[in-house]
Length: 348
Image 1 (cartoon, helix red, strand yellow):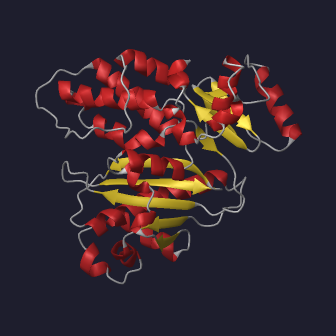
Image 2 (cartoon, helix red, strand yellow):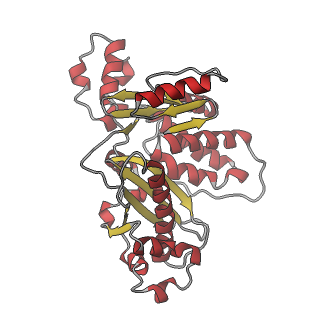
Image 3 (spheres, one colour):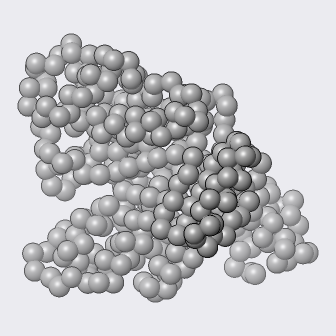
């Protein structure tokens, strides 16, 4: 498998002959530098420990903090402020630039800020002073939690592709926000949070449409890895039984007659056994973080559930290198989610 983006690329193969052949062919016409170990790709720093990869973007976060002059701390992505768009305003290029950087950050290594960034992007063409306050609050949160690292590991006991789906009316506008994230081998590998393209009159209709979006994304991912990994059909997890009944045709005429035809693809995918759908309790949903603002407790809970932050080992190594007298055993007693609240942090 070969992935290339402009001047960066990654080659994944288990055959040494193929690897050597790929090394020789392009170098006849192009000047390429090959590294046996992957350390960075498109601005993402990568560290491998055993069967796990740890991803972070410290340079992008530093650039974002400097651009917005972030100096405060925050414990949740969005404050308790209603965001509204004003009709007349001059486009602020700095606001656009900050949103662009945060979108890449959210899509690459920080899924827990995906909803907040999309929420701020809604008024990107009419950014006002209050919008800047909310944006700086999000940057403060990113800076406060800059030690968080995305962990990509392998759990061979969880081979099924799990797709958590959700839709929620965000309280602004008439369209629902739908989201999903995909777990493969026990690790989150893809996530999305978007405003739906059409209006749903019922919650079950919005979640039914969200199933279609999530199923198409999951099948696209399966098509990309099927030559490498034998993958069973994705399992979609949703907390709305009415939407699942529409998929199974038991109440289709009553509740789905106003749904656009394009979303009925989910019925065909279920009948052809390309995907399966299971119900999940509302308390078991982890996709909520992508559809609405969460408080500090829920934000940290979902972050731990998604295994997004695994910094205790790296934090211990970093502090022990800078401060040899500091006891590493004390650092290791702290959980990854408590790294930013480390009691002696301000004394260094």
